[in-house]
Every structure is written in C-alpha cells, then in structure tokens.
Image 1 (cartoon, rainbow, N blue to C red):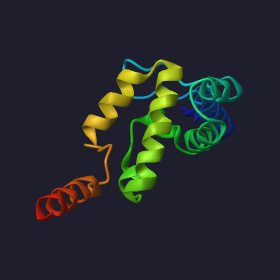
Image 2: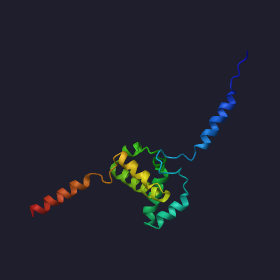
Image 3: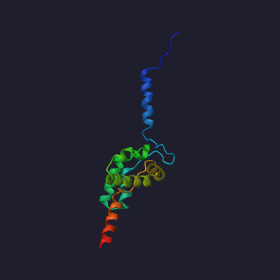
Length: 135
C-alpha cells in the first residue's frame, strides 16, 4: 500500500495564493472594509480641508502608518514621542474619515487609550493661573 504525499510545490503554491488573496488585508474590526487607498485622491481630500504643508505632512504620516487602521495594532504609536504621536493620530483620523473607517479608528483610540494631548497643556494652564494669581 503506497501513501501519497502532497507535492511540496503544490503546498508552496497554495500558500502563495493565500498570501496574494490577503494583500487587501481587512482590519479585525467589522466596521472597516479592506483598505484600498487611492493615495492621489486622499491627498486631494486633504488639500481641500487644510493648508498644503499640513496636507503633505498628514499624507506622509498616513502612508507610513496606514497599517494601524488595517490591523488595529497601535502599539507602534505608543512608543513615539507625544508630539509626533498626535500628528500621526491626526493623519490616521483623516485617513479613517476618507476610507469610511472612523468607527474603527475610534475603537483603536479607545483600546490603546490614545490621548490627543501631550500632558504638558495642563502644566502650562497651571503656570498661567499661578502667574495671574501672583499679580
């Protein structure tokens, strides 16, 4: 009785097909479809809403960090300095709005407890209050 072993090349080909099928990776949240981004349209979307410099910055950060929306993993943002993280968050928020994934973005922000402030704003307000009180 001879056993048939699957052809190694067939297994490799099946794996390649699965990888190709997963290129438009859907994020783990049900509210977000697979991200297929027309970057030129996204840049125009930004230019209609903000200055060219700000649009360019948000476009660049969105291209660099768009996988956060795809896979729901914002751990890379947690390791960044607060000021840079906020710029990236604004970029991802714009990208989420453009792609219709705003609910997904809000879920990610809540899950990772991302803050829209650096924490230094409270210190500045406190110092301002103290200075005003001492006059």
